Image (cartoon, rainbow, N blue to C red; front, side, top):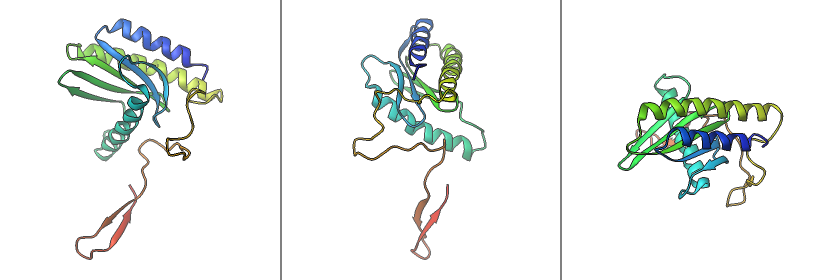
Length: 171
């Protein structure tokens, strides 16, 4: 994507504005790395985990009537992982030290998420692929990846406790 250098520049500027950041990654909503500055962290794994967390966050926001996904914050003993919506087809994930000012993290993360979303959405509107050309369109098992709408999940099959028969429900 021709926006990749611009997205990477935005990640570098963001890390300069918030010195407590230890990593920044822009990814597609389906888990492909768009640009990354994540020393010491495997970016493809982080992008895949971001996509999984995004799926849960979207469903939680929808199930509770909170509207469209905007952001997700995870606090661990040693720091934070923050994920922000970045346009229609991307997300921004930030890794930060425990001593980060969380208000500043949100302020700068939201701004950068908006900017990255504009860059990615503009590239998509021009007909450019969302993921960089070097990213494979196949998973490790060799099956093709397909995009799904945020929050769209397959039907679930459960067993009824009273009749002990399987039932399928749409999410």
